[in-house]
Image (spheres, rainbow, N blue to C red):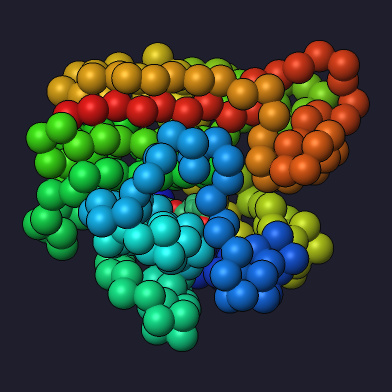
Length: 262
Ligand SMILES: C[S@@+](CC[C@H](N)C(=O)[O-])C[C@H]1O[C@@H](n2cnc3c(N)ncnc32)[C@H](O)[C@@H]1O
């Protein structure tokens, strides 16, 4: 699957154009000062004032700029050149001194030589990556000794299901590349997009062991029976910013979080 970066970059560049005007990403509120981080990761991050943060897969930088507004010195990294272009424009417009780097995660250390207090990544990240051992090594190499890795992402159990979450479609375990064409995008289902995308399912054990094998010490691991985003169609908001599946009484894990230390 050697072309996956090229294919996914095209898809993410097109998504960026739609996402920036979407209700999902609510640019007017963000520009007016709204912090786009969710309660889950805000609680895990704590006070990040004066901390250096490397934000992996930052998309067009709303969360990176939010962390900068919280007083952190932030560097955001993303594969999509259109996302990084927009992130830089937003940072300038909002007077936030955030560095943005356009590169593939696996070549990050060729572009970024600093070491950080925190490496952060959230929601819709590792499914785009084939090799978690190399991902974890990059995180380890980017942290200062004693630095923290903070991650919140959608739970791999949910990626076993079809779009309606009423039947199994994929293995829980990583069985190689999943090639799909998505109609629209999670931030706007009616958008005129139908691009090929290549993703991988990663079990929790694959993810956790990659971090441990890279040399990180897991400090906290949580699973959540809600998501802070309406990221798949069959969800309903049960409380402010808490979404659960609407067609089943049974609670499925929708999000997990990890904090690890170097
Ligand atoms: C769902 S976004 C995650 C960010 C955040 N949850 C948000 O909504 O702003 C996924 C991001 O991963 C990036 N990405 C995908 N593959 C990548 C890779 N190999 N290296 C770096 N970034 C990648 C995409 O360009 C996209 O911006």
